[in-house]
Length: 189
Image 1 (cartoon, rainbow, N blue to C red):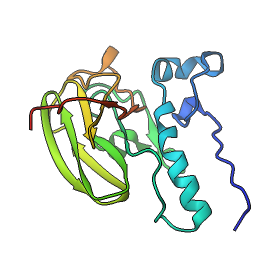
Image 2: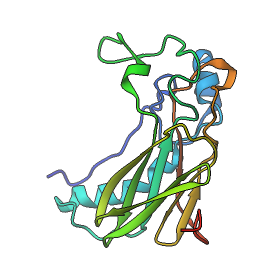
Image 3: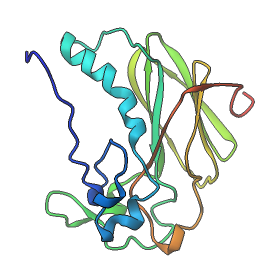
């Protein structure tokens, strides 16, 4: 095993691949409307866990900071034009065919617990195991504020899910947030 590991990001704003702070001067003009005001910094929350797991050669490591990171698009994939956005090795598959209308949550916990995910005031609770676990909640026609809670820590998404895409064009770049503050339950469960 390597003595050290470097986490790097090429911060390719045009392809929504970035985990560091946004540098407006580095965003190419064609990507500006899809990237500006959509930081992905919250993804850094999981780096200490994955770094420790890599160094230990096992996912069974103590998690220093329990919580969750979550991401989602701000509208359903059919809420506007796709702008010709494609995915895949050849870039020949419409992004509409490749994405799910869902809130994705990655939890980090030292013990089995539960996570609450809410969209527009309607929450769902899921059991999650210890370590890193994924949960996803389909939009299912819901719009509004996104909230996630785990172990008394809550996070609110930076943008609401809306019925019609801003400017009539779906942005396939997700917004990203994490839990952090302590507080009351999200939707009164």
